[in-house]
Image (cartoon, rainbow, N blue to C red; front, top):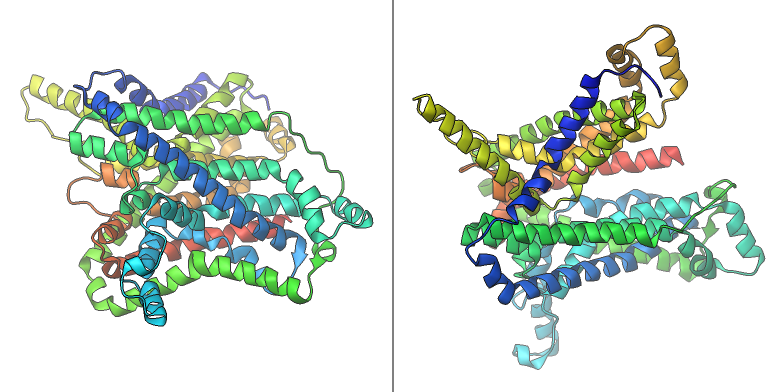
Length: 543
C-alpha cells in the first residue's frame, strides 16, 4: 500500500522498536563488563550442570508434549467419538494453570508423606522406603512431566488446526487405498502436520527455558535459576548478564534450528478442509479408548489440580479472604490493564506504518519489536535493570548538580519498571493480533479512503480502527492474561513491598503453604479461561 507517509511516522516506529530492543542491547553490552571472577567461578563449578540440565529439561518437555498432544489433536480433528466437542476446547484449559501450582499439587499427592504412597504402604504392608521404589517427584524428570502437562496445549492447538485444514480428498484417497484411521494418521496426517508440530515444539521449548518457578520449587538448577541466584545471591549484574546471553543463545538457536529444518518444506492443498461429514466415526472399543485417552489427559493436566485448589480454597477461605488478597488482586489488574492498552497501541502504530508506508524498510520495526517475547522473564529483567539503573543515577546526578535533593529510584524503585518490562515482553502478542486482523482488511478500502482525501491519521481513525475491533479486543485480552501470570520478571523487578497475585501465590508455594494462596491461584486460573474459550470459538468460527 503506497501513501505519502511523513518521516515522523517512520521515526516513531523505529523509536518504539529501539526501546523494545533496549534490554537485548543492554545484556550484550553488560556481558562484556568485568565481573570480579564471579562468572569464572560459575564456569569452573556449576555452569556446565546448569547448561546440561536446561537442555535435558527442554528436550524432555518437548518430547513429552509431542507424545501426549499429537494423538489428542488428531483424534479431535479427524475422528468422531463421545465427548469430542467438549475436548476441543477443554484440552486448552491447562494453559490457564500455572506450572508451579501443578507441581505443588502433585508433589503433595505423590511425596512419601502424600496420600498415594500412604495408600500403597497400607495396601501392600510396606514399612519403609527401602521396601519399594517410587519415582522421585522433585527431580529433573518430575519437572519435565509437570511442564509437559501444562505446555502441551501449545502443540495441541497448532496440530489440531493443521489436522483440521488437511484436504478431505487426501483422506478419502487414503481410505480408497485401504488405509484405516491409524494408518492414515501415520502415513498421511502426521507427515503433513510436521511444520505445525515443529512450531509448537519450539514454543514449548522457549517456555521451558523461560520457566523459573517450577524448576526453583523442584530445586533443579537451570540457566533461569542461575540468572536469578547470581543477581540476588552474588550481586553481580555482569555475571547475570553473561548467563542471560547464554540463555539468549539457546533460545535463538532453537528458533533458527526450527526455521532451518523447515526451510524446504512446502505444502499445497487445493481441496476443502475436513468437516463433520468427513470425520472417521469410531465405534466400540476404539471410541471408548479415544474418550478415555482425552479424558485422562484432561483429568491429570487440569481437572485434578483445579479440584484440589478448590478444596484448599474452601478449607482456608477465612484465612485467604483478607485485605492482602484484595490489594494484590488490584495490583495485578491495574498493571495488566495498563500494559494491555499500551501494547495494543504499539501494535496498531507499527502495523499501520507497515501497511501504508511506501518504504520497505518501514516493515522492519514491527518485526524487531516482536522479538521481545523470545526473551525469558529473568533475562528481560536483567536487560531492563541495566539501562534503567543508569537512568536513575543520571537523574539523581543531575539533581545533585543543580543543588537539589535527588528523587531516588524513580524508575527502578516504582511500578514503572514492571509496566515497562511487561510492555516489552508482550508487545509481540498485541502486534500479532493486530497483524492478523489487518490481513482481513482489503487494500481497496485504503485506496477508497485515499481517493476521498483522507490523510494517514484520518485513514487509521475512520477506516482501520473500526475494522480492527476484534483484533484489538483479542490483543487486549491475551496480553492481560499473560501479565496476570508473568512471574520471573515480577520477582526480580517488583518494588520493595509490592506484590501481585503471581508473586503472592509463588511465595506460598515456596513456603509449602499453597493452601493459603489457593484462592489467589484460582483467580489467575479463572481469568485465564476467558481468552482460551474466545480463542477456541474463533477457530471454530473460521473453520
